[in-house]
Amino acid sequence: MKKILVTGGAGYIGSHTVKELLEQNYKVVVLDNLSSGHREAVDPRAEIEIGDFADTEAVSKIFKKHNPDAVIDFAASLSVGESMEEPLKYFNNNVRNFINLLDVLTASKCKFIIKSSTAATYGNPIKDDDIPWEEGFTESYKPSKSALLSGIWDGRKTEGEDFFQNFIRYYQKFYKKRPELLFNDAEIKKLRIPMSIYGLTKLIDEIVLKKYNCLSGISSVALRYFNVCGADPSGKNGESKPKPTTLMTLAIYQILGKIPELQLFGSDYPTPDGTAIRDYIHPSDLAVGHIKSLKYLFGTKGVNIFNLGTGKGSSVLDVISSVEKASGEKVKILYKPRRSGDPTISIANPDKAIKLLGWKANYSLKQMAETAWRWHSSHPDGF
Image 1 (cartoon, rainbow, N blue to C red):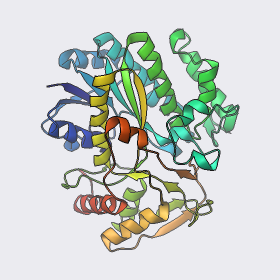
Image 2 (image 1 turned 180 degrees about the horizontal axis):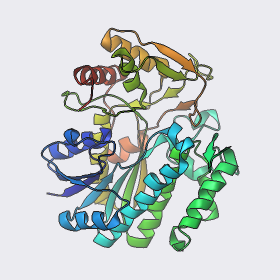
Image 3 (image 1 turned 180 degrees about the vertical axis):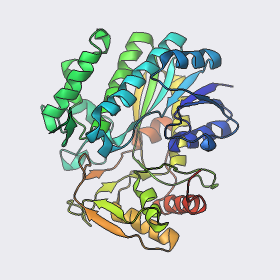
Image 4 (image 1 turned 90 degrees about the vertical axis):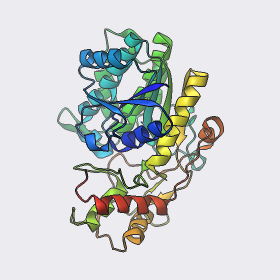
């Protein structure tokens, strides 16, 4: 029986994946600093260790204690908007700590990792046939200027190539004593694709995974999943955060009176109803995708990237409508300007995952809303 260490396993998607791993007879160890996750979210059949990747010595001891066969990594900061305001927080949590984790894997001779990535690596489509997104886009498209939208660097407003160069220079300076981790010109061109610092950090992680495959033989799968919503169908688990950012959760929070109105960012997009279009996916579908990827990785090794999405687009207003139908209540909306870092449309082409992983999303938007409403209405204060 293989033992899997799940970082961030007390979080929203991580805890769903822990449950699925246990259902499929894996041994599971959760490693989480509980900064945003919940001990109560972790299936009691799993072991749990409290630790932070900033403390590599402590994490190394946990690896030596458990000797995992593979790692599934969910540990990261996740807010697009916050990433534009606090880019160094995202450098530390999403890049530096991830490299620390890979160094621990190297030292412990653990050779397999599944990495949670994101559709935010794709940025905005350049031409109509870029949608639905295919994994090869980030290999073929090498822009000359960064797509980063406006944000804050060192206390001043910035955007585009200036913002990008500040971030990349910071990375290159930080790792100047580790030349094997520095980016070459081709990698830098690729990194200009994302519109947000969040997306940029995740694309950096994907490139770093390729470097560690060459450096220490670590095989990996990066999973670019799309917008997550819904809850465990059994009602035992759901999103529980003091400041959630997922659209469906926020819509439900408004109905429950936890927020005065749902802020809708952008009603003037070039879409049928004026709101942004996304590919929404249930966390239970994602959990299955991670286990399918694990089996694939054990059988093939190397480095690969897969989209995990339904292949269907729903607008912001579609999601709000699904919540209203599930709850029987109306959502009070406050319309706001577009949010920095948000693309107009993002839909997955899941064909690669269907073909190579044998995975396909099963939950509809209606089911996502129904499971989410069941969880939040019965757990109005979370865990």
